[in-house]
Image (tube, rainbow, N blue to C red):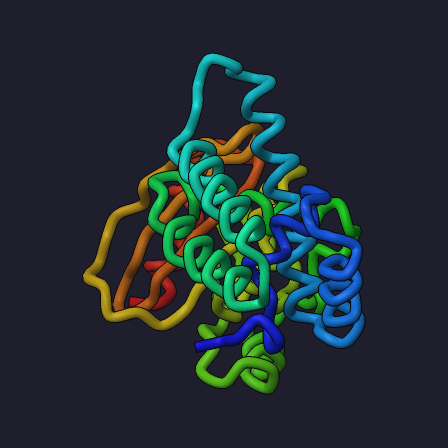
Length: 240
């Protein structure tokens, strides 16, 4: 199990909320200065907060499961910090890591947040190419066992790829474009059975989960449900 000294993931929420002591904040900042995965995770949390704020502004009467769980986690974390010590902060980290992924909309919101962060950073792709073979080789060099992208077609252009962190794991991300919209396709090997695309909405983004022939997929874009289903059909056809 990861300790606080290795990766203070649970303390990142408290740091972002300004709830840590000066000593605690300095300790987290010292860790962030040498740990790029935690810096990326902190940026994901920031992007997720913006997505949640947009969702609440669009529908203030709707309180998602993720919001309720986050409030519960924060309440437990505050009690842990009141006790004091690194052991209490490590316990808070375990609560956050266990509870948040189980929320019904948690993964949907995280997928949307990663996509939003990539767009806002201006780095939607790390390697720009329309060649699926070149992109597959590039991804495999950075992430052994990465799922290679498929070629574009039927109105979808393959624009490039990058490596992201999603649900606590590194994942290969292929980036496509349909009309003026970019579509992120996150993919990783999975033992789950085949599943047809299941769309969800997270603020301005449409998120779609599906699986096919040993690969789990999450897709996100401003493009509508029909576009994402069409891209899923294209990928399935070319992987069959």
